Image 1: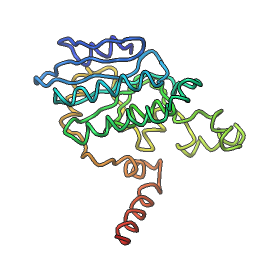
Image 2: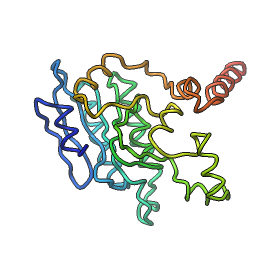
Image 3: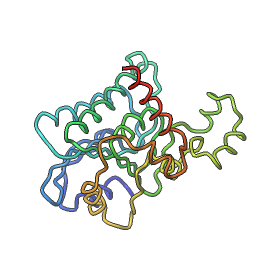
Image 4: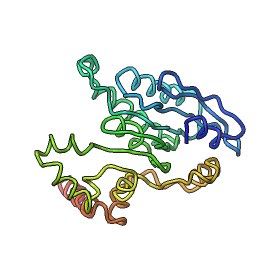
Length: 240
């Protein structure tokens, strides 16, 4: 689905969402009268310091004058890999964007990420994975790290990584693998009005506590993460 088709299906009564050089921002009114803030990344744009600060600004500005959920649409490249962005502290800008979304979610602004295209690395972490719930559309192509990059970091061969990816979702890009790890809450249908699916999700939002590790265990994609996290928490409580 194209961005225009997605917006039309999400908001059949109309919307005020714009795409400005890959940065999505605006709002719409849901069927039950609640206003929703819409931000995100389009056209596989890279997320650099400029995009990150604009998006976080929209989130923080809305906290002062609005209520209601926040929808983050995602079709991005990875973070912008330029000398300028790195020297300006891109990691801090991406962190600021992620924290803005998390802060909003903690203060009665439930956040939903909708991955409809590509996304990778820091751009995915600071947008879709910073929301309380991330859903995907068929055809979405996320990757925390692609296999060629993973090969450089791990010093493993592509052949070895491709073999591991067959049985271990952590080593494999793609929507289904992120869903198995618990990072993607659900995959929506592109044959059912997205407005209906959005309203159903909002009516049944999971608790604020991040359950991605628990979902990963339930789905067989990350068998140890939740147990390790609980053990670390228990040890921390024992030292207080």
